[in-house]
Image 1 (cartoon, rainbow, N blue to C red):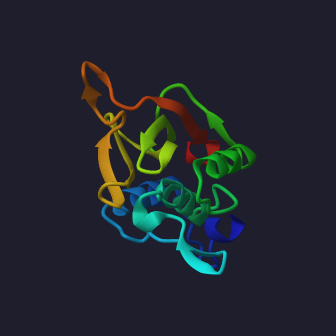
Image 2: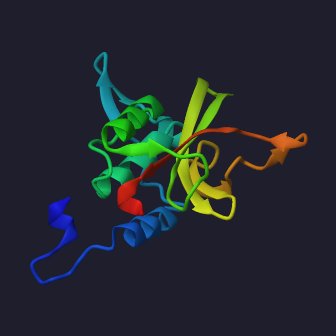
Amino acid sequence: MKHLEKEENGLVLLLKDSYLKTIENSLGSKLFRNLYFQQKGQKTDILQDGNLSCAVFVSWILRNFYLIKNVHSTVRGAVKDLKKSGWHRIKKPKKGAVLVWEEKRGKTGLHKHLGFYTAKNTAISNSSEKKKPIQHHWTYGPKNGKNYRRVIEIWWHKKLD
């Protein structure tokens, strides 16, 4: 990240401010909807037009700021890269922390989910229904007297302190 930290003209990147603003500015973006691969001679959108885009959304932003090594299409791959890139688990969320939600059954089976904690019990993550990043309660709000989707991991990087 040396080339981003200090430019020749003396500018110094404000990493946390830029990172948080990028997360906020992602709301409503269609940028993370599609990722094409060739499979058995056929073009395949592995993100299913935004249905499975949470890992690409989160990892693209993290990679953009050199906080992980690669962009990932799965939660498992993104979390593995978090571990390798100096992220550590914390107990209480901080603004900008990466959240991992428990597995829930969706249209294509059981899936974990990734997003960002944004403060005051809110998060931003890709919505499979709206097919773009949205802001929501960090547990997707109460349902039947308890949180709808439990956060199972909260990740933080010391570069964001």
